[in-house]
Image (cartoon, rainbow, N blue to C red):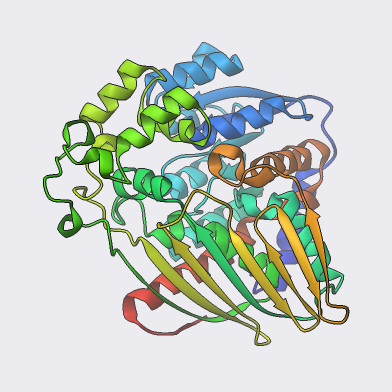
Length: 439
């Protein structure tokens, strides 16, 4: 979604350019608040990139994760913190900070680090309601710091190529988009039935915690302000009344577990043994990648519970319809009931059609009836695989922008993310009230 107030946007961009200034002649320094899966992954990409980076501090409440992170990046012992507030209260220790905390902590953390003068890389979602998003955008502007939200889908080679094709008029004027996010059945069971994002009160609603990426990406592709949204969806399957007869409270002691598609034993031990995408989830569920740690996690932790006997309440499927200024429309679907695979998109124009899956782009030309296939070769699209090159693209853009004084590389600033989040909140309001919400 484009920024509504273009004057404000231009002013913010000018201020950012002035703030970033000239290229650095020393390594960029980075502090990390939250050494979970996302914080650890982003830090690894930063350390392995072409831009010289020194990670100077880490805040993480879990001792094992904090120690492992600090050892990996040679963080000085005096800069290990058990709470992000301790890091924010200390004298400024880095040029920038990566905030990869739980969603509800984003607004307080962003305000605290901006007040210290840190440039901020903020994991999505930006915040949990419209007012908090406004606060974050305002505090970054007031403090004169840059703030980039981790909308990694904007930074993939696939998206960059798609944007160029649309700008070149390969399918004429864009009229309509169909977009599917196949969450994946075991990913959904891990994160949204058993995991940290299972309850609206604990985290937020699913469209925000999982698919603000996609609503933001659609706005980035269509490149027009949103006029109206509607939405429908519910929690249909992962409910106590669908629990198989004879099922136990935990997968380890369940007599019907071998026939259950959502068994924890099909995910975490497999990730330990076989690696691959499933190991990403195993690292989150267990303190260590050992058989003892995984067994203990399934025996006593949240990830060993029956998927039909948890305290989850977020939807397992949802559709969102969007109308943009000028009449273009988009329909978005998220679903738990899919394999672990790439997103699927169809873009319909006045002169042709584009089909894409996060890696391959197929263009159909109405004038010639010819099909052109482009392989962007960007790897797997899941979080464990780097979101199709988006994680690496985001980190490279953030580091280069700050080290080389290139604010033009930042595609997901505070204003852009605030506006796309407003669409997400409007869509959830539409779902809950069974109304069309106009922005």
